[in-house]
Image 1 (cartoon, rainbow, N blue to C red):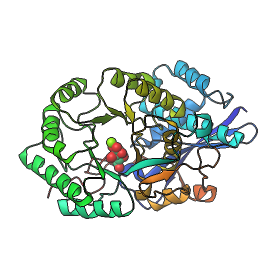
Image 2 (image 1 turned 30 degrees about the vertical axis):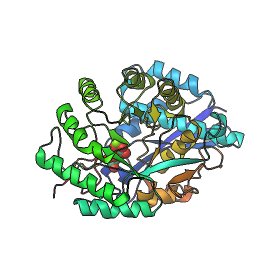
Image 3 (image 1 turned 90 degrees about the vertical axis):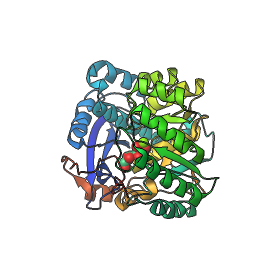
Length: 393
Ligand SMILES: O=C(O)[C@H](O)[C@@H](O)[C@H](O)[C@H](O)CO
Ligand SMILES: [Mg+2]
């Protein structure tokens, strides 16, 4: 089955999402010579046009190739792209094509992909909530919304309690962050996991101070306390704190992931299947992590195809810690596009049994949501925060 067509599809709706880029999705539809169709998803970030163009460019390396030769196809692209292999845009493009290829493979074999990725290690995947705290500013806001999340059955939730602080944090910022975390811990009790998101924005000294103040609330992990490029910062953070460190959502290759594993910079790796290189590279990263006693918590914050493939891979790996879940806080159109047959129940998601990545795309809605690629607007708030939380109180 040769890859005949690769179509990048930009989708948007008037209904906005939690972050600027949540208002847009970029799907990749791959069609083979015998008419089989698979879907992948790329990360729009703020580069809708450049990601769209990257998919067009990267596609050239895949057209005419055998769809099941995922390893060889990735390798050929890596060889041909020379410089582009180092860009986020082409990494997410190649990831989306790879995911669609696996989707086709599963559909052809009449099997969910977990069955030929080693088989189920678990029937249901433990997930944690993210995206639940939009508009939360005061500790009471966070506590009330956190209670709602737990009422829905979630056993874990992640949030960024740092308001408008960037680079460094002062005593006021530390106190505000602590009050929010304390309020959430008291609201959810001791048995629910809480994860502290820093979005990689602090220098090491501030991040260390934060860790010392927040460790008593027993976070499951501290995510990106400093920017992932700040290697010296991580070394300092690791030698001055006892907390569990998670990072990885912005890594774009196997060898990049290897660096963090090899240098013991993280306890938990968060590869994102839509930018690490698809299923083909993600499973290698997982194996490297396993051999080095590093746990996995896939980053899963963008769209419903990403969610589906992340569940499939989470089902098969021995070193899964927990999976991120944004699905319940997606704008409605993203949920209508890919109907979730396995909602979160009692904190877990059942692994779907449908062929391919386990979900169906609503093709009629897909047509309605199709849009031209246009640049996303950057508001005053940083785009990576959940809307209206970039505030003090
Ligand atoms: O770990 C994550 O899921 C990301 O860092 C998110 O927290 C981003 O903020 C989100 O993509 C914006 O809505
Ligand atoms: Mg994050």
